[in-house]
Image (tube, rainbow, N blue to C red; front, side, top):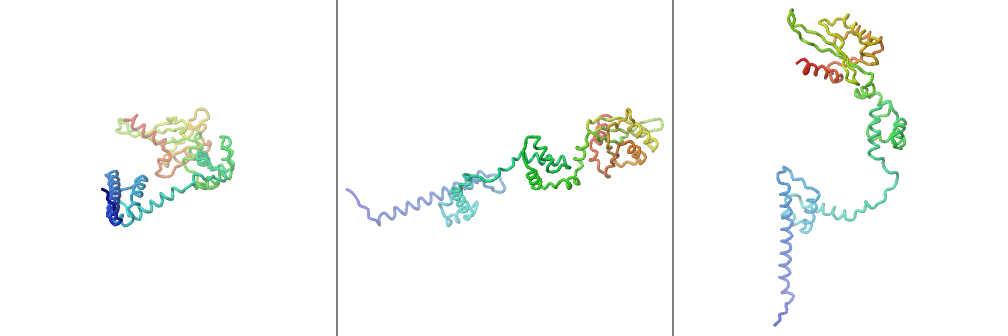
Length: 294
């Protein structure tokens, strides 16, 4: 015995199937939201990654704006639908298939090398840098060098020469720079506690330290003799030195500096309260106090 269903009898079945499917889609979206919330547990602010955004967009598009407005809790319906539109647009994005035209870009390694040469050699122009790169096997034009420096905010040669840093100066003259400084030693004598002043000179390139003299009274006459000892043509500690770094200690008097200057060693007096500009000598004093005089 067979039954023939009339069209009006199929309507409840169709409606029940549609409601069941919509409920299932809503459950799937809520399950996805719940899973993302568990993945983000412990965070003060929920930050979705690309995969989580894609999952919400796919599940949310099926429900539509109206239902999303009732159940969405992480993001707004507009955000979900906008992300779905981006997913659709990405499907038709064939930019990776396009053939690039024009001159190929300069490699990052070459750019880094240009910047390094420009920083270390502030007196070099574009042509000098181009020649140095050619010697290293990098063939680029002086125009490319210019464009790289301009893009990274590096001034042309005259401006870079004026803006040379203290670190650049030290590196450029490392082999001919010396430093001088004092340290003190407290010694118990018959007269009580007496302060002895010890003066030393240092070669910055080798870190070699020369003990120059020690006295309880570093007056002008004693300092002039120290200058003669330092610049002696046979065994002076400053042979080959062109610049001598020193702080503004009054013991390093004008007569001392004049004798140095006359002997071809230029005294470089550092700004007040700037021990970092003579950091190597200052570190030597600290090491002597902590390791030797403890």
